[in-house]
Every structure is written in C-alpha cells, then in structure tokens.
Image (cartoon, rainbow, N blue to C red; front, side, top):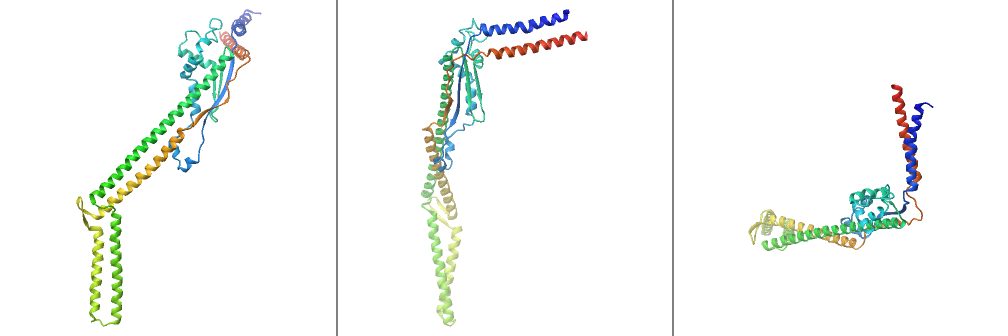
Length: 370
C-alpha cells in the first residue's frame, strides 16, 4: 500500500477504533450498573353538577381551571424546588457521588452545588407529558433499585403535596372572594334600605304608591259620579221640558264634577305637598321613591346571589377538587437497565465513523485541488 493508504488506515485506527475501544472498555469495565424505576400519574379534577346547576352556575365562582395542571406539574418535577425536596428526603448528593472516583462519567462530584445537582437531575430522570390526556410518565435511574424506588416515591409524594397546595390556594381564594362580594352586597343593601328609611322620615310618607293609589280611587269615584250625572241629565231631557229646573241643576253638577276631575289630573303633575323638608313636588317624590325601591330590590337580589356563592364555595372547600391519580405506582427493579451500553456504543461508533469519513473526504478534496 502507498503512504496515503497507510495514513488513512492509521487515522481510522486513531479516530475510530481507539476511541470506540476506550468507550467500550469504560462501559463494561468501569461504569457502574444503574437501576430504573417507573411511575405514572395524572391530575384529575372532581366533576360535580346537580346543586351547582340549580344555583345557576354560581359554582364557577368557587372553582378553578385545571386545564394547565399537567403542565404545571411537569415543570414542577423538573424544577429546582423538586430537586431540593428530593435531596432532603432521599439524599441525591450522597448517593450519586459515592462512585465519583471510580465512575466519574455517570457520577456526581461530591462538592456539587444545587445548580449542579439540578443539571444532574435532568440526567437521571426522564419526564414525558401527554398534552392531550394529561398523563405524566416519570423514569428514574440510580445505582441501586431501592434508591430509584425512593426517588420515584418522593416525586409522587411531593407532586401530591403540590396539588394539595394548589387546592388550598384555590379554596382560600374562592372563599376570600366570595366573602368580599358578600360584604360588599351587604353594605349595598344596608345603604339602599337606609336611603329608603331617610326618604320616609323626610317626607312623612310611608309609601307614595299607596298614596297615589288613593288619589286614583278619588279619580275613579269622580268619573263614576260624572257618568251617573250624565245619565240623569239625558233622562230628564227625554221626559221633561227644557225649562225644568232639575235640568239646570244636573248641568251645574256635571260642570262641577268635570272641573274637579280636571283639577285632580293637573294635581298629579303640578301639586306640591308639605313634607319635613318643606314644599316638594309630588311627581318628583314618586320618581325618587321608585328609584330607591329599584336600588333596594337590586341590592337584595345581589345579596341573595352572593350568599349562594358563599355556600357553594364553602361546600367545595370541604372536599378535594383536584387530586393526583397514580395509574402506575413506583416500580422496584430487579435487574440493571442502565447505562444502555449497546446503545451508547452503537451511537458512538456511528458518530466516530461519520466524523472520520468527513475528515477523509476533506483530506482527499484538499489533496486533489493541490
């Protein structure tokens, strides 16, 4: 073979065979066996109807939206907060740094900070989230099956605690908002009733509507008397002569009744009455009273609605609306699964071979051009 061919063979040996041999030797001779633990869970929200529908949807004031609970839990598992919690309960540093001198590639250095531990956390767990169904799958690896199982169990326990904290916060917020709304509606009802009481005290009129009804009764009576007088007038005209004094008397009575009706009608729009605050227009008093009554009725309706919302919020606070449903309990491994030696060797061989091939092609390209 020519010198060029020997260079290619030597480069293949140096760039592919030796590194691949070193990787293979490390994986089978140095790397410690690791064991896996798998768990799966999802966040479920209680579905309730019946009484809430009867209340016209007021239960929505006391409930929360759980559509993003799976994403929240996914981020929480990968967060530094979860790393701290699992470190406190299991001891990640002590476990993963015990083989640092023997297996530095798959171990954690003993003086690792919490940021280093958070980086290493992403190497020992795999979290997958199905955004459609909300199912979360967690895979954990450790140097012994008991520790892997303990880490998985700790993740499940702390995830449940986080969901409980979300429940507590939602309940507290719902109860606080409901109570604030109830206090505001009580104050509004109190002010509406006090305004109506002040009106009655000032005008010395308990109910202008009843007073108006009495006036309408007078009008009805006058109109009835007018009708009777007109009938009497017609009867007299048909049975007596025009000079009969009774006809003139009935005509004067009809005129008097008509004048009185006209005055009563004008009084509805122009009369001023004596109240505790002096002379006030009767139509303005009626309008003011009707406005106060509308305010009171609205305040009473708001009070009833907020009172029902408080009852719904209290009922929801007495039960757990969100909970963690574990469909795959943490598993305890019986055989080593990690590191994936054959997979790592195959990927390393592919990468080294591709790199060597690219360098060889570059070498030949440069040689041919020169």
